[in-house]
Length: 282
Image (cartoon, rainbow, N blue to C red):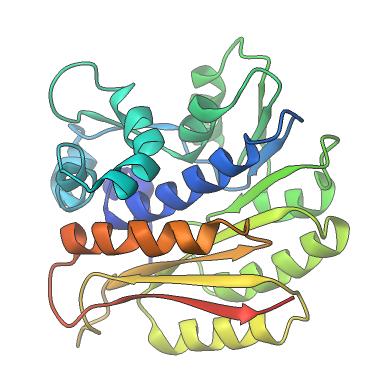
């Protein structure tokens, strides 16, 4: 897929992914006890939407560009407020020029007792991420293969938190690595919340991925599917999904409020749909 994120930052898939992450972190903050966020494919943290890469695709215009000044009903607006406030914190003037990747978004939402482990394999990206968080004692940046981190860095000492697995899908076999990585991580830390992002492009691969999750033996798996167009004749990113393991009891209801509002703004061609499906119950 060659998902070099500078080309795609702030697009519809980022919006949906980061809204889900925000809802999960806001739930964790309801208790005073500290938690940790483990971001296995962290990227560079901050994206310039005026860069050559972002301007070449213009994908952010169909994502955060549509959201930043949109109006929502009271309930959806309240749920989206922490995410939009995090984006606005990088954009003190009008419009959107910068977009927070998942580590910067998570850091914005942390309290003083919470911690972030941001893991990035590419040396240049890891160096930029380390510079972004230089001197921040709440953040640890590691230049490491995120798949290996699912074994070595779990469970965190806080015993509460979120593991975000958001691979770039630049190589073959990423769906298989997602399933294998989740199984390995869940064995080490069955009580953690896991959020796995995936593209909806190869429909057969997505069907096989969901089937493998159902057969994994892992309980409490909620699948979020968000399409912006029907299946294309030529392979393209028609949508994206998020799998959440051990979702908070509040999440499904919150998503049933938020996803219709997002879909109304972000869908580009009908018929397109969003859905929530439990791949595994208790």
